[in-house]
Image 1 (tube, helix red, strand yellow):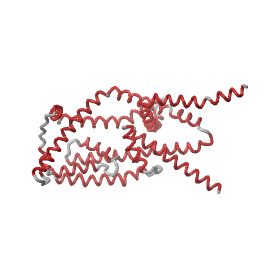
Image 2 (tube, one colour; image 1 turned 90 degrees about the vertical axis):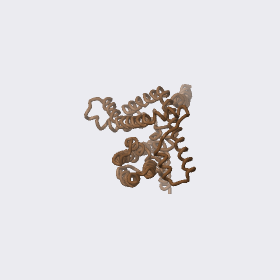
Image 3 (cartoon, rainbow, N blue to C red; image 1 turned 180 degrees about the horizontal axis):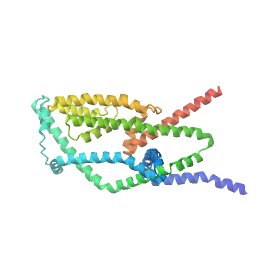
Image 4 (spheres, rainbow, N blue to C red; image 1 turned 135 degrees about the vertical axis):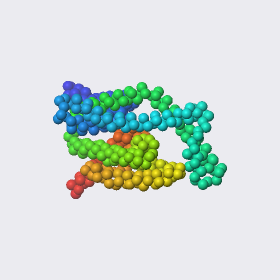
Length: 352
């Protein structure tokens, strides 16, 4: 009688856990991307924390310092980006007011000269000129709307940011406990498989930084130096855009080099246009075919298509956190299938 009760009570444990997990997931869905993103960033914070742990007395303090060190480049990047955008917004403030009332009569002689330099018939040149100016006016109006929407969404952004900060801190501080808990609930016969999955996740997280973020940062810095010496305005903003554009497949930073080069030639700065295209090609080629392989050779290979799909569709579905979450999920999935296939092949060979 007692043994039957024990069996019945045990049989309700798994369904209860599943129900509670689903209910918890339902509550966390609005913030789940930030929690996962926090866990990913905690991986890098833990690495920094371990490096500085011998020099500080408390583990919590080392984690806090690790978060600050990781946040510094992000804060600087955001500061320079917004400061440049504010500078551009200030220069177009008059046009912005006109665009808001629908009475914009923008006077951009450089655009007119550039269109005339194409050598097209007069009516076509005039049509292109008006179309370009209208597009710029609409773009400015769209940016103004985005700015208003951004201000209205600040409370929600602040809440998401707070969740991210706490997630990073607690995952970084208690990461060992989380891993120990996961290890304890994994059946013994599956632990070898999951250990390989954990190792693959470690490789993916390293590859995200070493194989993608660092080369993009190097390209951005070199591009910024190029823009500065060639006399382009807003060199910092152009450098940031060039670094981010490195994640765009096929086109990459050429979306910046090409546009700047062609526009410079059209407005009569032929030397400037040729130089930005030529040295841009050198920077992009060196970064993609020399620097990236050099610094990522020590980590296991993750198929480029995995990172490509992860970065693009991760960002589309989850925003900025998706740049990290997407490659991680696809990378682990790819590794799981690869490890499973390897074990199946090994099992068949053993049987034969």
